[in-house]
Image (cartoon, rainbow over all chains, first blue to last red; front, side):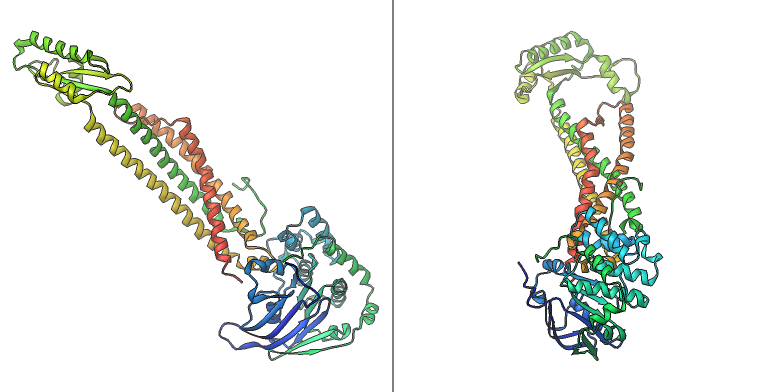
Amino acid sequence: MTIDDNDCVVRFENIGFRYGLGPEILRDISFTLAPGSLHFLTGSSGAGKSSLLKLIYLAAKPSRGLITLFGRDIATTPRRDLPALRRRVGVVFQEFRLLHHLSAFDNVALPLRVAGTRENDIRKHVAELLGWVGLENHMNARPTTLSGGQQQRVAIARAVIARPKLLLADEPTGNVDDRMALRLMHLFEELNKLGTTIVIATHNESLVKRLGRSCLRLEEGQLEIGASAPNRAAMAAASGAGGAAKQAVGAAAGRPRGHAV
Amino acid sequence: MKFMLAHRSDLPLDRDAISRFLPWLIAFMVYLACLALAGMLTLGAVAERWDTGISGTLTVQIIPSESSAAAPKEVRRIEAALDILRTTPGIAGAEVIGEDRIMALLEPWLGSIGGSGDLPLPRLIDVELKAGAEVDTAALSKRLRQAVPGTTVDDHGVWLDKLVRLLRAVEILASLVLLLIGSATVGTVVFTTRTGLAIHQEAIEVLHLIGAQDSYVAKQFATRALILGLRGGIIGLVLAVPTLMGIGVLAARMEAGLLPDFTLTPAHWAAMVCLPLVVALIAMLTARLTVMKTLAEML
């Protein structure tokens, strides 16, 4: 089956979500994400940002409503087809969720191994991407020996290595300095230019203002959609890292991608 | 044992305490399975031999006359019986068992009495049948009784039948032991696999979220179970071989004619060598099915 990516990448219709029998955390959420768009997801702590992302990357089922991912209704999609959908989604988890018994290299290589990529290609592209996020000297290090910022970069590299069609990042710059934050944002920008739809959950209001992209704001479980004018020129002027970001995206884009679901 | 059969895995299954415990448990199971299988195979072969071997003989018993003065008459009775036996179709040969040999057979019960004296010992004739020949023992017995009154023919049927039935029962018991060992192995692997799934739930969830199929995760558990099964199986086999050889030597030293021969044939050894592989395959399949069933309940 082929998917019509031109339709929409994500569509939420009247979604409600609660944990167990608890109160509804998300209420009547409706929005669509167009292919190749970049959005910030903001909101105060506990507003439900991570829960919303969980619903998108298929870690949870909504209590009500309809979710469509890459044109497929999740409620009626057979379970055996979900892994193929998940492979098209890259996720930077807030708590990183790295596998601590694996090296930084093997953590980043996981999505490619799961997809059955050849080891030669894995070695080449993982090394290149880890080099770009400044971890070329820590490829064999276990996550527990890395700082919070380094772990975050490993998590980001793992999320983008397979060139996902949709990238979800939960506080991706929370543990890095401003310079590295901007560098990572350039990486997301380059992926976005190549057609990846991106949702970044963040508390960093200055970053949102600087990039000036569409903003999804969650307040008390309900969603407000705001639009800002793109401000890429200001972003490019702020750092000379744009060219290097293209190079890193090239590293992530070198492998064949599976589109069949 | 770390050098044996190393493999790469995305899950740290080799670090689980259960990974150190499982091979020894499987080794114990395979050790017991080897003994049970050896017993089953040798007893089966013995029952077969008794069925086809001892049933190829008859024993004719001639009850002696009451008076020892009738010795020449006794000789004539034996000769008459021998004549009938040697002219009966299907009989390869008939030989009178000497008095010395009869006394030797009775010695465990009567002690050494240095000759039969006044004991009215029966005379025995050992009859060997031709291979594959069937002799009508009832008709033969009738003919012998007519010519030599007081003669009986024993084809060992009742005695042999009981022994063979006993052996078959022991054989079935050994099969049940094998079945129990197999079930215990399956149960152990299910338990250890479920424990592994619980321990590594977080890592498995990450693998799922980056697009791993259930079979990708199941393969890691199945490979681990295969390797641990092989390690344990080989250890169990290595321990079972000297045990079986020891039993064989002890049985041979007893020199008791009726005790079964515990010698294992090359075919028996081949079956024994296959045991670790069979157990490892059972462990692998069990782990895979357990993981697939458990993961099917996840989103």
